[in-house]
Length: 312
Ligand code: DIR
Ligand code: MN
Ligand code: MN
Ligand code: MN
Image (cartoon, rainbow, N blue to C red):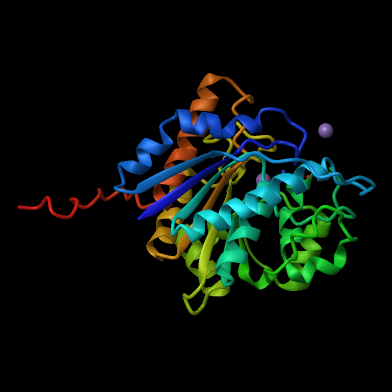
């Protein structure tokens, strides 16, 4: 298997400094080496560079010109990596980077199913958001059913929403704003909150989520993993922690299941902020991120198979 890594040291989708250092911290923990140990051909494309677009006059969307410039470049980079026949791993950065990764994935593969693993729904528009932070808006920007709820956004013309909300499933929700809840109910969005994980267990939740968004097992799958979906006791370094989240075991189980579909072509790992908390907090969070990524690219807790040609 072939994998491409792209780092996105972008933090202007929210207001806490430090999340731009996520890619550096995760690479320093041995990301490339760990993936190579899985027998993968790994190419690190480095960090994205972008030019901000000249945008102003949009109400309640902080730094839209930067978000637009960065996600446009990122979308093109993702398409390029997928064209080179590599699965793609994107390291954030805040969750606004999901606009670029999912746009690029949909442009390249057309038929895409998205698992949005998050404590939050990231489904606000500029009219419903209480923060004005674009990292709380990507799902609403990406999905065609929600296009009518947006004003014209200068700088975002390259991004025509082509993904149906029926192809998105949430897992891990526990901090949903009231208008987000309204939208989830109005469109019947597939959403498994923490109470569903408690009721059914993670295995059945993932099974049901895949069954909903991809009943024919034909879609190219994309996991957009916000590290704040994990319990803050296991991943404390993130900008908007919410108590009572997924355990590392549940997250690894989820990623192992997705890997086994053989259709997991893109993973985003976002919102790791190494500047929050102490050194031990950073180590815990970065190690959690590495475990989740490894599981998504084929590490299994049963042990790996002996490489071909090495058996006697
Ligand atoms: C909140 C928080 N719903 C907002 N969102 C976060 O700002 O729209 N997403 N933290 O990850
Ligand atoms: Mn600011
Ligand atoms: Mn998020
Ligand atoms: Mn979140």
